[in-house]
Amino acid sequence: MAVSRIQDGKKLKRSVFHRIRKEAEAAQPKIEAKATAKYLRISPKKARSVVNAIRGKNVDEALQVLMFSPKKAARLTYKVLVSAIANAENNFGLNADDLYVAEVYVNDGPRMKRLWPRGRGRADILQKRLAHITVVVRDREKEKELKSQK
Image (cartoon, rainbow, N blue to C red):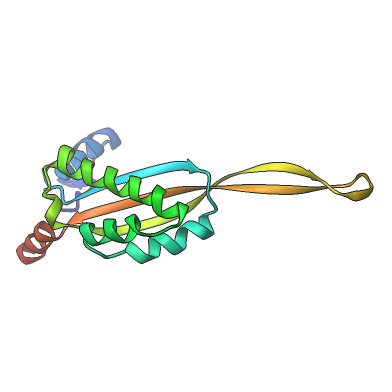
């Protein structure tokens, strides 16, 4: 539900508008949970190949894919996915059996720059890349209920 900033022909104060907007958001049923791991010591390019494999899958299937993948990014993503499932169950009371991986993405973190000595007194810069992995899980059943109500 969208909340308008103009009520009864008057413009609401910003603080009042945001209070009303937050109350309206709190009244909506929660259907998703999120978990983020930041500053992971892996190249984002390497991690993206793993997270693309689990996008859109049921949580059980995604955990199986990550568990049997030999890549380092799979171990890191597995931990983030387990955390997102725990957030969904404990914070929002969602059923783990109905969850699926709605969004998963890898963002660049800061880069550590190191000097690499070369011949004749020169040096190259070595960039050690960091990544942020975010996983969003949604409840498929409650999502269907919300779509049918609209």
